[in-house]
Image (cartoon, rainbow, N blue to C red):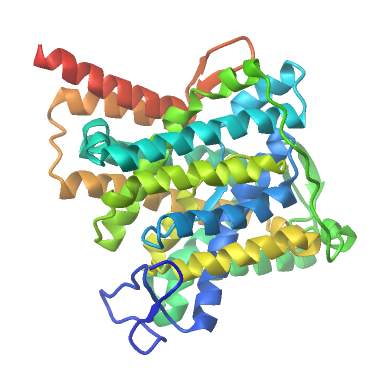
Length: 436
């Protein structure tokens, strides 16, 4: 099943305890709503990370849609997931640019990583998922899922929330109500409703209370309106993003290759999380998922876009809605491609106030982290065993910090990437010593 979906029930609603499976869908108008919710959930990260790396954000959004469709086709529609810009490369890209590397050098290095990631996925697929089970037992996969979610906490706490704490708090509480109290379709799109509510609240507050003095997205404290439509007014309705080809330099490639370890772990963690939520055994598609992420990265970077990865934000949306249909992701991918070709719409979504994103992402990242605990509980992981407890605890703290470990004068492994390596190496190292 790749492009065929059965209608779930009457196509309009879910009964208590029901879920919409990956090969099912609700009515198409409802699926468009869910798809839009996924776009908004991923948009902030997919738009921001390329900007930080000095790449074209509109191209990143467009290529995220292309990479998502590629991903869904390669996994045969079995693993609902959105593929967007990866944050794991930010430190390495900053180091490449500090050494004088241009856009082509950056995307060439990222393309090489995509090739290695794709080959790793192919090896997993051909040699069997038992390799993954040995490397990523439940204690590790649960820990990786947890550190992915909690490791994003600093984005909500340090980037979004300070921009407007009151709007963040009110938006978070409103989203609580939309998800936890509303029933039927409205409850399923609670995240989208929270974002729309927060956007409207910010706009009304601007009209009644005037400007706010607070940090902006760049961290600088200025007096500004919460909602700024200047970029929307200036943007064209139709426009092709800036494209460029890759340039391959060995020094740059070597600098980013270690990130492959984190990407494999991140993909495995996401797939395991999806499997836990859907109740389906998706292990057979683990290699395909890793390979699909690699192929998506190659396609994106070949034209000047960023490297991609499966998105935790969208897993959080699925956890909130219990709608796991891959139809929603195809819709989201098409919308993202259209956004990439329409700078004005991209600017409108990018105008979402940081406080609003703070309220919503606090919920989403927390839900993702708790999926890791769910994996531990369902697999009866023994946290009294120090071999389990010590490396997982250290890895999670490295991610949450985020703790940084300098590798060169200009590059440091940090956050989720460092936490994943600490967890993996620490667990398997202690396990080997324990056997002796």
